[in-house]
Image (cartoon, rainbow, N blue to C red; front, side, top):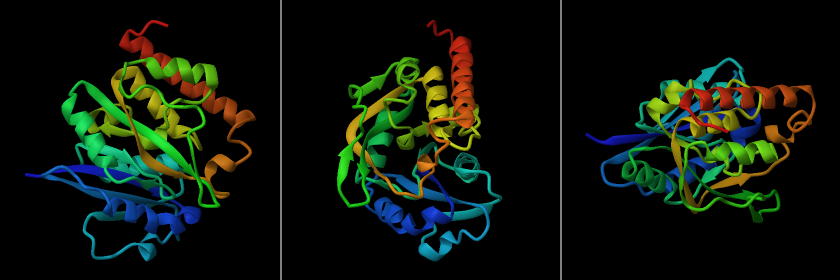
Length: 250
């Protein structure tokens, strides 16, 4: 019987126009023998109409709609509908590079004690050029449990890009999916995973992260103000509680 890796994608009105590029990047994946992918697309609110942008004859695509709750709620609902052993995030405006899924699978299959993977990223700018992730990458290979927290505390952002996460299903279920925040819920998940299990960093570029005016990170509340302070405070409290429960000493 074959094994499945699930890709979960939240989508709202602004991101629909990029879905075809995301799908093309899935078609470019070359998976190990006996593996296949499923794509759980979650429309975040009515009238998103993702089906208008995607083929109707690919049974691997599973589209559903939920009331508007934000991208992290939509991701978690997509996870709830998924069936895969591993769950991979792919935002509707981003693209996977060829072999990205194969590298995630290889790391998790080869290292049973590793709970999650991330990878290197390049930003795709609106003029079509790409630039590397501004904070630099960690060393490739194992990311020891608890190691991501210190960097995040110092810089107020992670060194590894949470949009690239691929997670073992039971570990993702244990954390309840993504944190239900208007933004930074993927950072909250990353720090939760880091508190509970070793990770793995693939130094090859695994994600093309599109920068554009309509993305959530362009909102003025994303990096300052009362909402930002509340998000950061909760993410920190959540991570610290998990670190204490896991016996990690600061």
